[in-house]
Length: 197
Image (cartoon, rainbow, N blue to C red; front, side):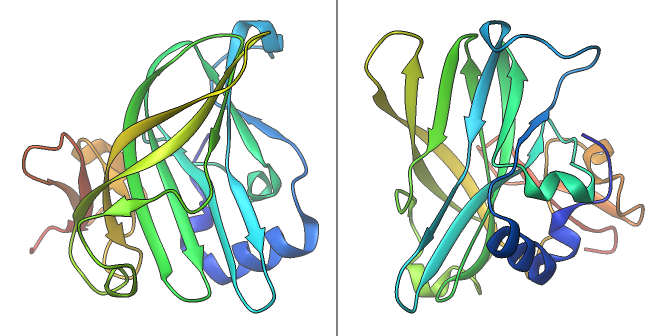
């Protein structure tokens, strides 16, 4: 993944997602393509109802961001091991939010963000306006040849309008050179903010 992110053009992202649908997988590891048996796969989701839609997609892996064509991907391939993931979630009611979590991924496992599973300490309609807040997200884990299980991971989130991206260190804010990483207390994650804040 490299710079040039969907986070910079959220309306375009939504339109492309709706119009083009899920079209592929982004590889997030260096080197040549690996077989599915050697990697973990993490999937986002899109849900459309009569007058409501909600989707969530992986917008960063270990601080690296996809190029614009990667918006069309429905999933990411990860090397086995620990990774921190940023997810951008948006809906017709709740607006945009950016959430980060960390977990250990295993090869030959498929991980899927579970729709509508986000739980936070901020009411849903207040999320687009509040500062960083904590919560949790459910992930369906499907090991090869075994039934799926649900796993809950702790998240740190912030509304999209107030923070351009999540981070763990200043280097994660490379897309915004006048920003630095402000960590959220007791979380290990932060959000890129202007250096004068």
